[in-house]
Length: 209
Image (cartoon, rainbow, N blue to C red; front, side, top):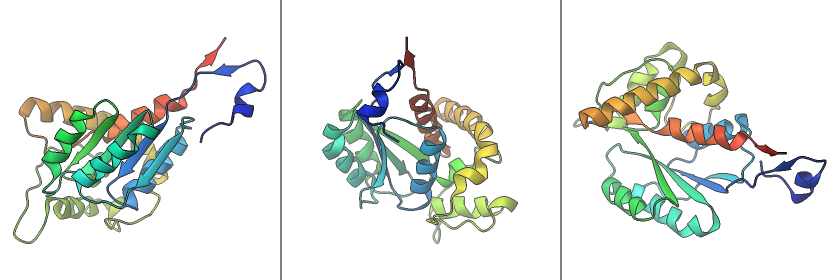
């Protein structure tokens, strides 16, 4: 994705220096692969690194982001609310290191973003005696015909499959997030559309005259 100094010096066109971006994902398969494919699709020419840090709890992810923030212009932490005990701590820790560290949150989990490719919903997901909010979200996602074989943590390349529905998902995510703020109830909602918008802006290389 990054461009060498040689390629930047060819011809008469010069390119603005693009920021270096790190995205740390909570999971090592589904969301990770989706975001890698999204960055590739939008030709994010910045030095974009999308990785799993070996941590799965929100605070551990944010702590890893803080440690690596010296090597990047901005670090995004893509985390789920679900029933993580360190979630609130992670948000406060990230806020203390803003704007270098930014949190991309999905309530209850990343799969809500996938759901928005098919429909808008504000149905909350609450933990039960036998299922986490994330489990219930995945169950609803599988009820959709095109997603009936989905498994949490799978590495199937979903970005290309859902690409025709991407714009609808972005619009719905923005609407749902606004409603969530207005109602002071974030469950369900997501800010993954903001990360997609960031990839799109990084891919829009601006040529200097």
